[in-house]
Length: 378
Ligand SMILES: [Zn+2]
Ligand SMILES: [Zn+2]
Image (cartoon, rainbow, N blue to C red; front, side, top):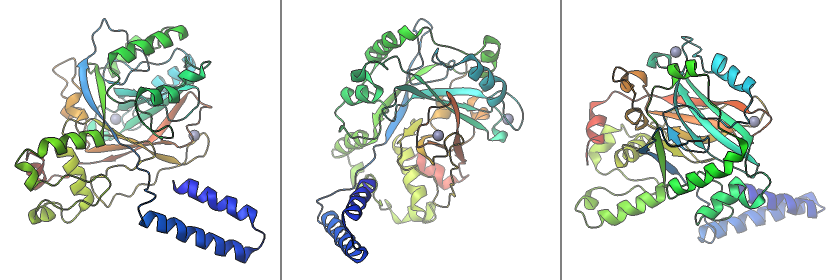
C-alpha cells in the first residue's frame, strides 16, 4: 500500500510546476492520508501468513510431479530444467561447503508469486552434520504447462481456487486444494513429459526421508478456529490470543522473566506452542517470525539480477520430527539443529537462470529450561 501511495505522490509531482507548491501539496496529501488512516478509513493491507503441516504419506504408486508441496522423498524437477543445470546442482551446489558431503533433501514447495508464465518451485536441502549449519535453498523456474492459456496462469489459478482478493500478493495454495487439484495439476503438466530426477546413485545419499504431502492453512483462519474453541473453555481466561501483527501482552508477569522482556521471543514461542507441528511459515514479502529481537539480518542482492531479496518463508522446528528417515539408524534429531531457518529470495523473481540459489539465516534454539516448560504448557 505504501508503494501505491508513493505513486500517487509521484503523479502529483508531475502535474505541478512550482517546487514550493509541490511540497505544500504533498504535505497536504500526506496529512490527508494520515487522517484517513487515523479515522480507520484506510487500513494497512495485511500480508497473509500460510502455515504448512505434514499430511498423509505419499505412496509409491502415486505419481508425483514438481508442482506438489511435500517433504522428504526425492526432489522432483520439471522436465524443462536442463540436464546441465541439474548436473551442476548435484555435483557442486548440493555439496556442503564445509564438509563436502552431499546435502539431504528436506522438501519442496510450488510458490507462484507473480504473473510470469513459469512454474516456480523452492527446494530445501541441508548438510547432514548439524555442526556444519549448512543449507541450500534452490529456486527453480521453468516454463509452465499452462503458458499458452491465460485463464490458467499460476496467478489466475490460485485466485480462482479461493476467495482471496484479486490483488492479493501471496499465492501459496491453501490446504483446501487437496488431492483432486493435485491430480488435475498432474494432468496439466503431463504434456511437458515426465518429471526429472537426480541420478539414482546421488539420490541414495540425499533422499533419506519418507515423503509426505504438505497441507497448508491460513494462519488467520487457524486463529479464528482457536478463538471459537477457546470461548467455551476455561483456558481462554488465562491465555489471551495473539492478535496478528499486534503487540500482544504477556499472559502473566512471570513470563516477562522467562522471555527476559523480549516480546519477539515471546511471540515466536507462543506461536510455536499454539501449533508445535508447524513445519513451514510462508509469507511472500511479509515479515519473518523471529525467535529473538536482536537478530541482525542483512539479505544480499540477487546475484543474477541485482534486485533485493525479500522474506519468503521460514522452516520451523516442527519440520525436524516431521522428517522421518526410511532407516531407523538415521535419527533426524541428530541431523538437523535449528529453531527456525529464514529464507529470502529474489524480489524480482528473475527467470534468466533456471536454477537459483537463494539466501537463508539459521536461528538457533536457546537452551533454557524455563522456555521448555513454557512450550509444554497446554
Ligand atoms: Zn557439512
Ligand atoms: Zn533475481
